[in-house]
Length: 512
Image 1 (cartoon, rainbow, N blue to C red):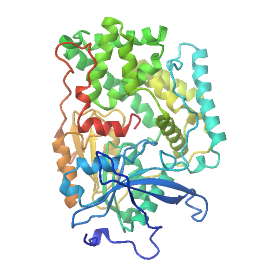
Image 2 (cartoon, rainbow, N blue to C red):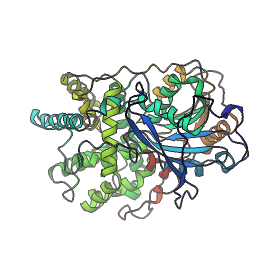
Image 3 (cartoon, rainbow, N blue to C red):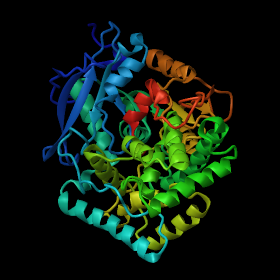
Image 4 (cartoon, rainbow, N blue to C red):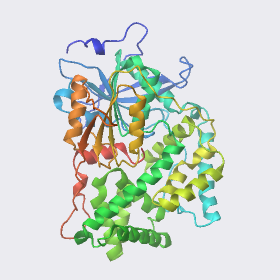
């Protein structure tokens, strides 16, 4: 093991947290994985006060050339990153991964970090009220449910919620950096992790060595406006799913007209609203089951199989099985949602007048019905959050080394315009675009063109430079999946749910 080079030099005096004590915690897929914890101030303005404990994992470097720690984050807010270290270390070329200590972490409040939040256990248990209100009474039921969630969270964690925000989480990253002994940090974030990385870079630009941001949050829209843009984008992505099903009418038998397939899907939704499939999958659960298809088209064959089985055979078990796979929320999901609401409601101002939410939801639902109301209720606790919001960080930055951004043009969770906006705000950054791609999280997911840019950057610090326009480089999209079976859509199948793309999207989760 050689000493770090100049760009990854050890921390100087006064710039070191307590040294990390790594212990072996290898898994079958990551046999060299190590685990540690580090304490960070609950309130970074009171560094000698109460602390939180952050859980870490690491795949240590093995090459003579050591480029320092590479922190990896899957997004959220509320996503656990402990498994990301093993995934990224194995998905990168071995010669590149070997030059880094690849470090995953659970942000404050998440997973194995302590304390971990869980505001209302089993909040998403089926069957929930239909997200789409058909009367003022329906709306009131969901409104009260969201208000109660906010109130319960405030009563349960009054001392923690004021410090659940992206700025605090970004300062935690610097605690991790100091604990590793590195002068500068390498960071690789997906989804919400792009915003976390951009905020870190704004707070500590001199401590950024390399910064990779994949599927970028629009920093000008945090968080209310960004969610409104999602409503349109996910509806477009749901239509893309319907068009794909129509393309394979010989397999699924749901018609060759995409609009007709989409109408069949909404008829299925109406049917489970009247009689939940298996007593478990009502309209809200059906929405949650098909929502992941908007994040990753590798799920389309399995979703189409369940869709066709219900339409043709009234096979309720197929929908239940798909819900258990994609839509059901366990204790980890309860924790993730608690952190999601805590961070987003604290990060920025949300409308306090419910009429604003209602009017926006009615207006957008008329054009984009797939997830508008579901997204409204998912975020509705922020209308009554018990902690006053902060002002969003202005992430514009002229003090960074070259930054590498990745964005798919048809990404629904973080629409393309957000990547362009962040590219313009980070002076000297480079944007690599997947033209026509609709997945959320696009590197290390099977597109060799994208991964070459990623590898070159992590290995040598090189970025592409375009001659004009928004993109510095463009890659063709990863091909859409093929049906699971050319003979019948009826049997359950998961043929497109294997491989690196599926592993990545399982780690990223289904909310940012």
